[in-house]
Image (cartoon, rainbow, N blue to C red):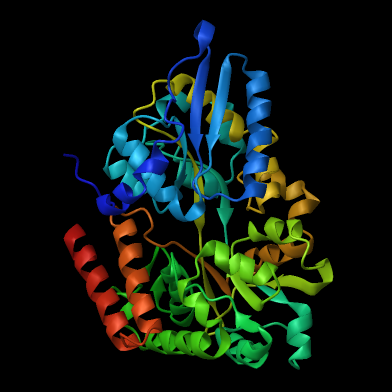
Amino acid sequence: MKRLTTSLAAMAAVGALTLTGCSSGGGGEGGDVQLQMVETLTNPARSAVLKELIAGFEEENPGITVELVSPPTEQALTTVQQMLQAGNGVDVLEVQDSTVGPFTANKWIYDMNADLEGWDGWDALTENAKKFANPDGPTHMMPYGFYGLSLFYRTDMIEEAGFDEPPHSWEDLVEIASAVNDPASNQYGYAFRGGTNGNSNAAAIITAYAADLIDPEDAFRLADGSGTVFSTDEAQQAMDDYLELFKNGSPPSSIAWGYPEMVQGFSSGSTAFLLQDPEVIATIRDDSTLTEDQWSTTPLLVGPSGKAAQPIATAGWGIAESSEHKEEAIKLIKYLASGDAPLTFAKGNSLVPILTSAADDPFFSEGPWATYVEMNEDPDTYLNVAQPRGVAWWTEWGEKADRELQQVLLGEMTTQDLLAEWDAYWSEKYASEE
């Protein structure tokens, strides 16, 4: 039996889902090939853009068709894991920087580096895109864009609460969200992430509070080598403030909120603040609830030192090791990473693009995107840092951290015990690498 870094129990629970559309691989009539492509960060607007790009690829490549599989976001990761373990049903798949480590450790992802030798698309990529695609090999993922947190806020709700500008710091957010919060009117301050991947937002406030102490190459380590960020007094203050934000400024039901519930909470008008990636810009605009003058974005919140740690996060396309159509899969990945396709995908999903040519496009320097330009132009305040998302145990960490964060929100664990657990976990993992 293969050694897995993921939960087999969870995979079995959704077994029926993974069987959907598992006819991939087999060629069609007359030698035609059908690729099965699985996305894991699904929403309807995003899938629509992807289908348009696939149609363009199919037009340029007669004889190759692509079936897009779009599992519900909360089940998507488990679904693709089971498909990869089964060794069929997927040719091209969405690979996140948090899953490339576990997927590679399980030998599920194909190294496409040799197939990309001499590809003229390399020169058009930004430095960050090259960093993750790794021209020197191995290449397990071709990024399609980058994510970066900013604070979405309701201009009208904070004005009604007596504030004339959005929060600049986490402490500001606690104050304003608490003032906006009015459960009797079904109006809440912050779209808290207490469910799936809730640990990521906890990490955002912890690294902001400890911004002067962390190693920018690994934001979970201290720069002086003395331990993990979770062992600091700054982390303790951050988690205490974060718990106050939940108790006094967030919907009680947000203890179970993941990505879709957070976005829905903001776009439906029930919460005033949302910490999310720029892809939400397109989602809010597609929703008719809020008008353009009712919301905006502001930079990532700073900690007491006046700095924020801005993690570089990405996802992209990879090829399943088990695919019988790697030549055709490479064609699809090249198509999605060159020409107009990556800019179309970035615009449609509000991603930081992978091509240097995007700097000449007004789309990325105006409107809600101005926030990201502001952050990129002030690297002394918004520090670019990396989190250890590529380690083989990242999925294990996420499950553990989410579970324990929820225990804190339920009053079953103190913030002190939470941070002690997280410090011990990462200290042991780092020690195992030495």
